[in-house]
Image (cartoon, rainbow, N blue to C red; front, side, top):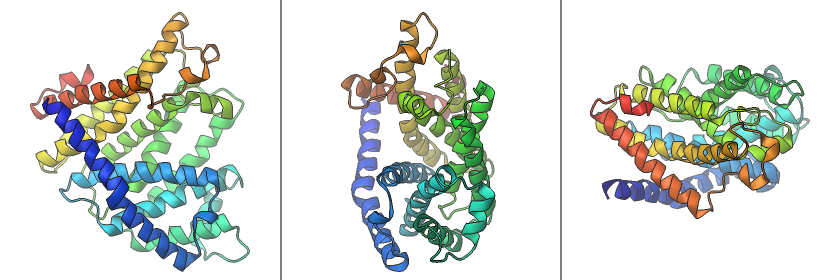
Length: 341
């Protein structure tokens, strides 16, 4: 029963913050940007707006988890910067994917003052970048931003016709997820503790893996290779995922934050991981239907999309949270062996 109330409390808080507290501040930020930079919803395509919504939810969720470590919720300024990065990210994606600009070219254009000759996307991206640069408190931001752009360059290999190895795909996945998640963490004003950067980057890799397993069908249709489109054994992917989670939890427990804040943050971080476990279960069920080998061509569209509207998946999600809470509680008592189970 205690786990159930913890589950309700965490999700009620998350819903309140997204629908009221964060919405109020992000709406205010958008109005400021509209007046300052001539930005509005018409400045973005439907595809960009969809990705902005996703990046906003994930960015605010991640930063809320890491703000919990310090014992204070995100400030209006931190929400503003997180939202600006959420707006900037899909624009950078399109500069890479649609305009074929390299990380060096994008960075060169962003560092200059935009002109009327630049595309609308580039003008907006330029203004958002300089807003973040001016207000971000972390000196490492320019270096991490460059790393994130380079990881975007590397990810273009996933759209190539040459089949990538599992090792190559894992390297791309980790680099992309870790760099962009660290960028969002830098929107929080408090400094990184010793070892925190590694924790954030590992959680970023977990987020990217979760994203890749959520809609395998879409990636197949887009011709995008991921660890899951090219997988033959989901159990190996599950072991990799579980290992990433175990190391992240253990390392987070050793950060020099108050223990109470650490475990409160861990309970919140389990939301994403519980979703990943639902996806893994569904993909493992597919594998069992094809003689123990994961063959994407053998499955229907609905089998390769993790639909959280299904009540069965919702119940699995809740159960996964309870099991993960138990693992977090075990680490609180010094039992790290349970993390590997």
